[in-house]
Image 1 (cartoon, helix red, strand yellow):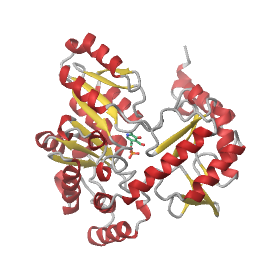
Image 2 (cartoon, rainbow, N blue to C red):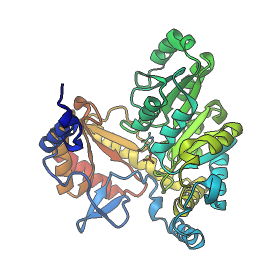
Image 3 (cartoon, rainbow, N blue to C red):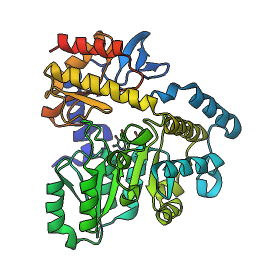
Length: 399
Ligand SMILES: Cc1ncc(COP(=O)(O)O)c(C=O)c1O
């Protein structure tokens, strides 16, 4: 039993002391994380005055640097200032919010959508808003932290099914469905650790058969797969309305910050008036709203950047796996992991890549299991063949 004295000094909490010790011995190079980007982080980035090929940004389509996005965003700031300074329900609504929400819903082929100020808080809010202790949340084993946190805070019973294993999901639902009022199944369009795609047709079949609700997080699939980036429903050619809740972030292909929930009109109407993170929180800033609106407009009219992203990712995946690296389950659309399987070695290789002009960050325990420690390559439409070959050559040297 820890002494009471230790439990009232935050800096002496045992978990803080233990994590600091682990971190200091594993991340020996203190500049591995929290690097400061100079200028815009896209296919290349300048850090401490040196240009690096960059694989550590979610800027899949490079649109954060697009002059049309920047111009439209500047105009929004001129017109509405830097903040809407209040909850939309009371004081903070601007026409751009409505334009963005209409645009997302039309683009995805559903009734309506609502935007929140962060992707993470979108999941936490949404899950906490629709299930409680009478319900079950069953999510993929690789689910993002925001899904897990939302489920924990909702007080629903939480469990996972094995990664992308539809037989496991079905087995669990067969056993458990009757014990709960609602069952919420949560999957992701593209999984962010491995870059593989969920089995959406099976998820839809199972959710219908077991009378569950299906939510799909499209953080990494919105703007990267499907017709013009319409995401995973378009990728599989299924009716978007068969997914009860489509969630996505604005921080990746959409060149902004924030999250959306899209789906049935009555449900979205309810969220706009009841979701705590919407009602009791400031509306999305004019700049973030405008940037997302223009970015979505660009890729919904012209898919050339998405095509380039796929070409780059497929080339990189093929080349790196030919070198003998374990690239996990990646399907080569936007994310390629290089699984090293040991945190210290992963950090070492990342640092060596950095010395060779490549910024690709290590993902180590506790973000993943120790034997799944990896360097994660976020691909971009901005990468040139020269950038990719430079990286492949460096990985060959470090093999
Ligand atoms: C699957 C998934 N959901 C939600 C989020 C949170 O999004 P944001 O970073 O926009 O808050 C992320 C972030 O990377 C993610 O990967």
